[in-house]
Amino acid sequence: MMPAATTIFPVILTVSEADQRLSGRDKVKALSRLARSALMKSCEKSGLHLNSFPKNQKGVPLPVGGVHWSVTHKSDMVGGVASTSPVGMDLETIRPVSDALLAKVASEDEWKLVGGNRQNNFFRFWTAKEAVLKAVGKGMAGLSRCRVAAIADDTYMTLTYDETRWPVAHYWFDDHVAALTARHFSVSWIRY
Image (tube, rainbow, N blue to C red; front, side, top):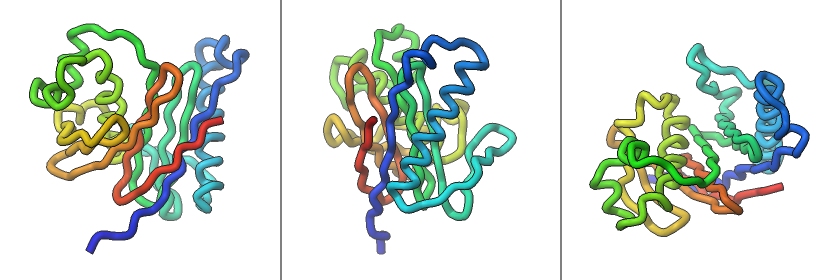
């Protein structure tokens, strides 16, 4: 019997103009702090509690008291999410990419699932795969084992990682796309 779906609340925050102007370590610290703020807002909405943010030696977030978490950041947007099961979140700014990168992120069989417009779907595939790799605790070295299996519509797709199916929800806004994966979930995106 499948467990009941749980609502997960991924939170996306806009980075202030002042923080966007930072560089180097100062910018990394500011984005990390803001992403953790998004994570804490997700915890609050979900009724979950995190009092630390441990990572393993490879930088993979470790669950705390049964709470799994994921953060993501770009120079102008950050995101965070907490869940009672493994979870992954990614966020990207949509922009043109090279043909070499298109070929790296998906196989010809995967591209056939969306038809001819690879540029428009690149970041959808990329964020979905990155979210799944975060949920399973693997880095980009696991990219070749992560495959798009089915596409329901512009907001939902299914990926596999080593034969395990992962549902992925997408959220499109401005010139960005965010992806979230967890097992047996419904999603309610929150953007500030």
